Length: 229
Image 1 (cartoon, helix red, strand yellow):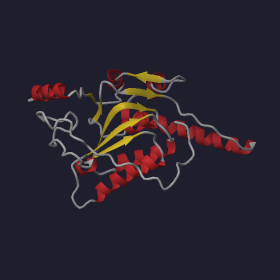
Image 2: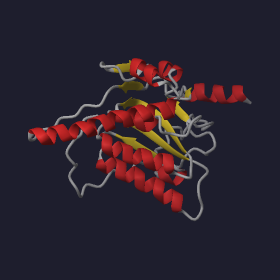
Image 3: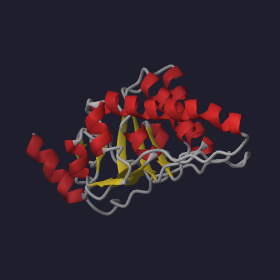
Image 4: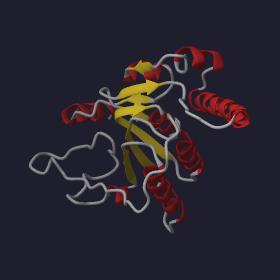
């Protein structure tokens, strides 16, 4: 969660498209979005209310996600909910909190799905999703830790920055408390101790980081959906 210099301007984020790997077999139920038909090859994810943030949390990736959420909120016809899929090693903490404010201020509930890795800022974004709709896959790697920060300057400048250090630490604690319902003591013990904390998806569920762990193997997902009927 180190603060990093701004990314170079002018770079356009890559749009993500869905290719249908099930074209030659029974499409069945999608593991993440059972309410939608399987997407046609080449269809943009955002048409279905889905955005994939993959990679570092920085000005570019967050600006694209913020723009998507805001556009959907101002659309003439609103979707019932949005789904933000996350696979991120972390990144810039200030930019991360900007996106968190947009997620939590959205009048359309934002569901979150963690895949691959949700670490550091990636985890902060994931737990910001609508409660009851934060999903992890069993193979997701989860990392929680304190922020890191490097500063330089004259003595009085460094002393002045101590206030922001303290404010940043408090922001993180309050965010964990709001999103998990855990006490400050338990957060400091289990999620923000001095050392890095790696969690399995089931451990994350016990700590109220996620609401469910979804086995996304296609046949397994179908069985789970049928069992609920």
